[in-house]
Amino acid sequence: MTSTDYAWLLYQQYKNPDWDCVDAISALSEEQLRLDTVWGVSLLSESPEVIRKLFIKPDDYEFNGRASGLQMSAFLGRKVNKICNTRFLTIINTFTGRAPVTDSHKLEAELTKIREVQEQLIHQGEEPSEVQLYSVLYNAITVILLQPELNMVLGAPVMDCIKENGKGGTKLLEVLTVAAWEINNNPLYAQKATVGAAYCAEITGPEFETLIYNSDAIRSSPQR
Image 1 (cartoon, helix red, strand yellow):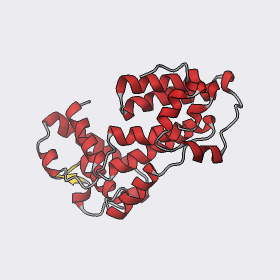
Image 2 (cartoon, one colour; image 1 turned 180 degrees about the vertical axis):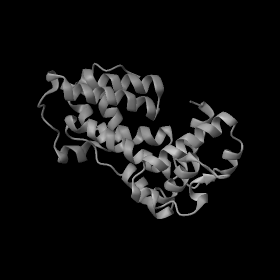
Image 3 (cartoon, rainbow, N blue to C red; image 1 turned 180 degrees about the horizontal axis):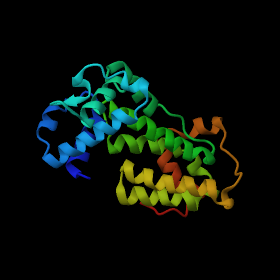
Image 4 (cartoon, rainbow, N blue to C red; image 1 turned 90 degrees about the vertical axis):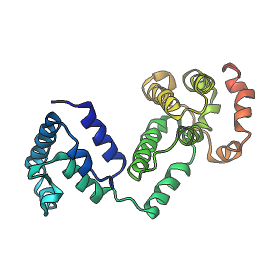
């Protein structure tokens, strides 16, 4: 059984653990209610004992006397991802205060971490905007963009992406994901030198984008 509408409800719940799903469950069709019940029964039967013990009151796992997957996931979501201002500030600082990558072979791991923190912000009901994501990603690559050996795999694709999509964070993430995989798996980019931390501090100012376009390392990149 599948349902696009039911999947949409799950996504709303995923973004906001404090979302009250009672009204949404009441509006489900018969087919969607069967799906909700099947999922609920599966969660109860397959969850470890430590999880099942959390469901103390019927309202934690039932709706109108039937097992409800939405009720259970909402209950567990509130336990795991409680929204609070202090937690939000901690997460957003982790998201925006990241240091640039100085070793291109660590870009893939950095992108994974950025995605993880982005998910945590979504759970706080504060999904980063496209511009915010773009800013975090661009900051991550400001140093390794100047490595001439990475021009074809990183520099040129990034500049093309910016030219076509502006400050679109999702598109930039797609480009960087491909580049990071290529850097880590193509022997052509094995064991390249890293950029020193001191040099990193010198080039991360607001004039960096101009530097990129004027650098001999990126001179073959498309011009705006």
